[in-house]
Image (cartoon, rainbow over all chains, first blue to last red; front, side):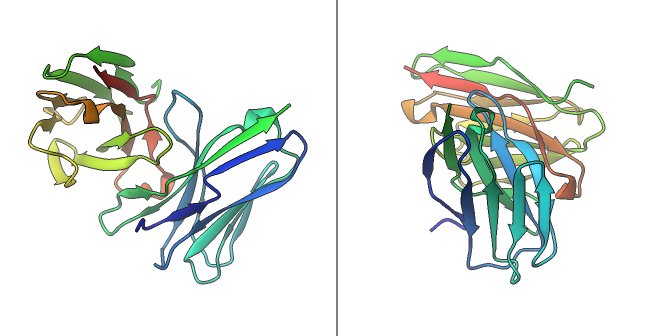
Length: 110
Length: 114
């Protein structure tokens, strides 16, 4: 069983649609990060959330950290083809090392 | 500083050969990490350094794998006697000790063992 379960694993939508992806765990975390990874590249940090219930916005992306700090969601409004990629959530352990979820692979068709 | 640099970007090798990858981190970062990523999965932790000291190694890091960071700057990851199961993207990242600022990843080295 993975520490972080991401769902869905794959998502294919049309340009302009809205979507939400999830990152769930049974453990409590002090912070959680979201990364986006394009094919052939390394992950790029999008946001860090640290407070239960926290909501952060990055243009059309809205990130929420669950009240109990066990889960998080990423909502994209009016998706564009440039949003295509692998979305990864990650948490740090006691040694400040990142553990990643399995990712959600998003494809946005024009 | 141009970020984290990894070389080579791609490597094709025959089973049984040794390969070595290099990572040049962001110079201000004192932590350097190696991760492995297979297709469709999230990155899996292999090992990390704080300055020149290797502080932790994953169970995934068999004795065929060795990593060094001789002067606390660049790092190398060597795989001896490669196997087909070693085929993956090898990612390097660097960070400050407190990772709340996130890791900066390189573009990775894609290894294909034939």
